[in-house]
Image 1 (cartoon, rainbow, N blue to C red):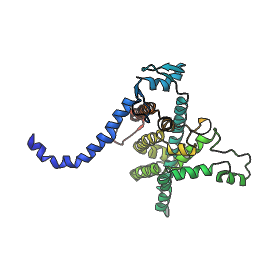
Image 2: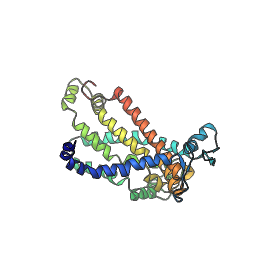
Image 3: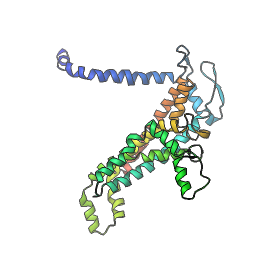
Image 4: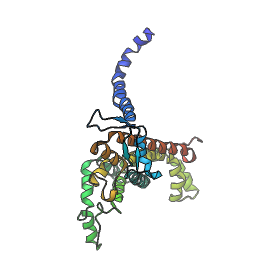
Length: 316
């Protein structure tokens, strides 16, 4: 045993910073977060934590069962969160709308960028720029200015004859749509990954299909899409996880409170408000763990269903 330790001492020393980081900055905070999710804890009062069992989870889902108030494990009367289900609805709508649109748009642009065009490398770089900038506060502020009642978008629409234009950000009907449009605009990373996948498809497939009389559209659906299914799987999972965690755009564009009639009250924004604005850190921790379960469940479903639609080109 001593010999093994001596032989591996230097490798373990190189691993030590990573081990300290993963234990101190990931594992321990996750354990403490799980523990706090069962407490009523105001982080501005370090000694205020009270064990309430599943009280925080009842606050989230109690309205589904007609509960408005209940007595927690500590004997404290607690009120069900009236905005929790709204935040779930907004987030699900955003994810199920933005992710498919983003992937479809990224794939179409990747197919175009895979053609032999002049300055194609320049175009690829230009299309990737929104991904680098899109998640920043500056772009969120710019997007809000563009879609205001007197913003540039309405100015352009007015110049071509449209009248009675709404404030896209302040109108509950369109506020979420502007955020969907913003995330679709950030298609660059998915485009690059699709482009890499397109480069791996043998040209022999297309040549054989052309000889058989297949049109470009038929080749796209019969060759390109099946060959790209592993890449589609990867992009779908990554973009789905990212969409569930969207925060900056909703916070800035929605004015930090979820927008008009909570039309942009994303789950992460609601979590942030509960924890850092209202100081209910125990409840925020419970919300974080539910979000983890939601993301994990959707990821498991996607991977579980992948055997039905993903082809790896080796008969699997």
